[in-house]
Amino acid sequence: MPTYRDEAVILRTHKLGEADRIVTMLSRRHGKIRAVAKGVRRTSSKFGSRLEPFMVADVQLYQGRSLDIVQQAESLGSYGSDIAAHYDRFTSANAMVETADRLSDSEATPEQYLLLVGGLRALSRGEHSARSILDSYLLRVMALSGWAPSLGDCARCAAPGPHAHFVGQLGGAVCVNCAPAGSPRVAEKTLSLLRSLMAGEWEAIDAAPLTDTAAASGLVAAYAQWHLERGIRSLAHLVADTPREGAR
Image (cartoon, rainbow, N blue to C red; front, side):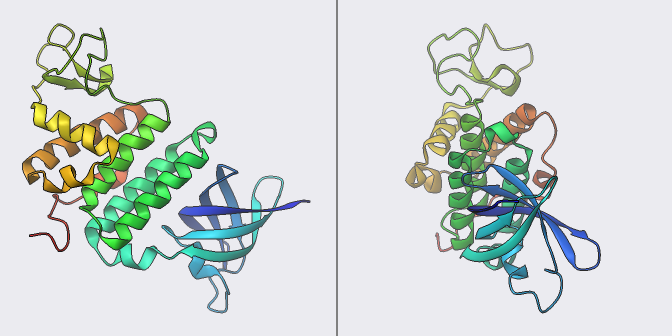
C-alpha cells in the first residue's frame, strides 16, 4: 500500500485500544484525514506529543483501507501549550478546530488549512483578542465555503446599503423591506466591524470598544451556526471578550 506525506493541523483525537489513538487532521493537500497513531499513548512514544490538538506537523502516512496509519510526525508549529495556558485562547481554538472538523471533504482546501494555521498561530502568540481572532476565522471560513455574508447590499434583494438589519438565515445584512418582522436593528459601526473582521483589518478591530466587539461576536456566532446546521459546542464555553494582552 502506498505512503504519502503532508502538512496537517491536528483537530481532535480519541483513544483506541490500550496505547493507540485515532487522529483527525486537516491537511494542506489531502483534505481531512483520519488515521491511527499506534503506540502514541505510551511514554516511550517518539512523536505522541506532536499529534495533540492545535499542533501542526509534517506527517508521513501509510494508506489503509478505512483508516490510514501515521508512520512519522515532525513538528512544524507547537501551538498547543501556549494556547492551553490561557482559557480564552483554549476555548477559541476549540471552536476553530471544531468548525474545521465540520467542513465536508470537498470544502477542506489548502486555503482552509492555511487559514486555520494562521488563526492558531495568532492565538498562541496572543497577537489580538482571542475572540476577535475566532470571529475573523469564522467569517473567513464561511466565505471560503461559499457562505460569505452580505455586509453591504441587501442579501435578499441587492438593494444598496448600508442597512440596519442583519439576519443570518437570509445571508447577512438586509434592507427594511426584506427584514422579517421583529428583526433587531444593528448599528452601522457593528457592521463596519464585521467588514474589518472579514478583511483582517486588525488596527480597526483592536481599537473597537468591547461593546461593539461583543455585538459583532453574537452575529458571527449565530451566522456560523446557522450555516453549519448545528451548534458549535465550544462556543458555549467562551468567556466575555477581554482587551488584547499588553493593550491599555
